[in-house]
Image (tube, rainbow, N blue to C red):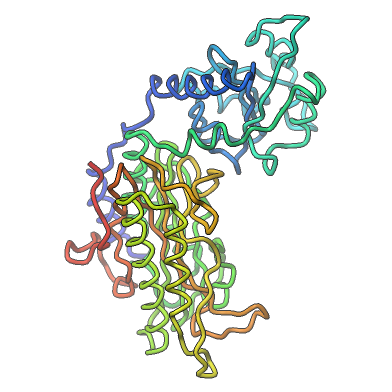
Length: 454
């Protein structure tokens, strides 16, 4: 393992990571007020969101719970006053530490504990008692409750609990209320995301440096994970991706104990979580050999799609065009791009997903902000997004028709007013960095769309 270059990368990047930059208690209170103002407009007395280690984004944004553990948990937001996080006994210990960042309050509910455990000394409260501390009891007036979490995430038990206590006519799903507020980022949020992406660049350089034939996928991932933690990122937005050879078909495949062979393509990705917000870098490279002409044509075509999407995003931002203009330009580029398949027939490559998605307190599960053919609103005023362009080399039958199973380029970019810029300095083509001891990205080879957030 190349210990020296790994430590040099950390040494080079560490002075640029401002670890103190975080969301202030004042900003959390401003967030609560924005949510509560909308609640009052809609006649809600109480709002509820749920969370877990998988779907952390909502309550991370509301209360600073970036590192939940063990049980699911929730948050109750009254129309006035301080929100209350509800949790089980074990996870509650961690959450109690997390909410010091926001000054939200905490109550333990037996319904949230691990189902087959017994906690003799835990001080559990009842949901009714907790609610009536937040919403004054009025026997003649029902409590109107809005569920802010997606029905895809919230457990059936949580919904049943609310319906049983307040009645089906008084409980409604209103997921857009929180999603639309979270989509618009403060300048502090944009800055934290910039730092997360700086860490992502550092980690990816380390992963590239140790990528050689004979190394295991997990060893590559271990280097990336080590670097992000040394630079202040506490976790990742997804398990670090290293998928080699035909594992490229997994698209988002976490690293395994598979040994990488000479001449194989490897897709890698890392998403460090810095003070609750996510960065990203993903690229596909070849190990131990140069690209063939067909492989280079394929990778150049993917790079062309990246340029097309970023230029369209810049144009849409400057003029205020509907965001689906960006998707349209990408689809048009793919339709006119013809590559030779294994039978020398000219075909257009296929993309696996949309080209741009929202980010924040999750890598991609923010619930809105993705650019699709159906999104007619312009991009938000101040937002953080991820450009994620990829080609699948196999067809509907699973047959490989192009020379690479899967190829990807993903970065994060910001939009502030009419201005845009990619957060990452990582070049689009990183093939020359594979197995090489680069401890910094050369100034003459940074991402052409990189722009420092001012």
